[in-house]
Length: 256
Image (cartoon, rainbow, N blue to C red):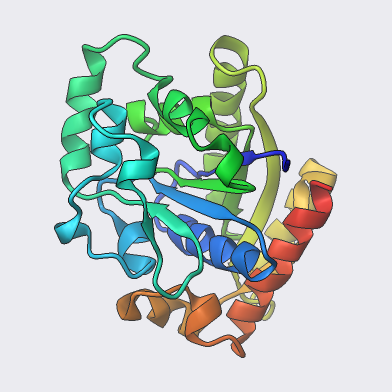
């Protein structure tokens, strides 16, 4: 029996490639023969659409699971091209935010739901919304660790300290297992001096927590979601796709 690893892909800054990281890491792990579930916790439903599933046509979604009106097994779907399962999201999820406030165990509902499928997966990857909300909190309470995608830009380090503080608080109060698994440098352009400088700062400050793999800025990765599939399957020969497969290998290796 394999040991299930549950990871949030999180960053409190928007537009840093969280969803791209989630679906491409999922596809990369699937190519390595791992059983993967993607949980879309963002009401925008980008990870759902980027996996080739129409968010508007979801009969059951993460919303139903959080309100305990459906199980993960009932609500999940297969990504047609990605080779992994998806617990999809759509606009309904924005309403869950309000409804959860009144409910008991409100920040532990995802954790409880995932326990029901724990022996069916090797990895669960949770795509979190940028804001620290009850949805993000559900992700952090369910996870063993956080993968932080970040651009090597001036303000990136600032946002990172907020996220580290949030993780410390959740670790201290709600989920003692939670830790930072690693920082992934994304949309990287080696020609830009500032990006290289920030990259060096990251390594100096976080050491081994910075993944070796670097994801380059890549047009094919950006185009892939509009075709409803991860970049890894959309154009396997692209530099971005190859980097994500390499990243999947690094994640597997790092976690034994």
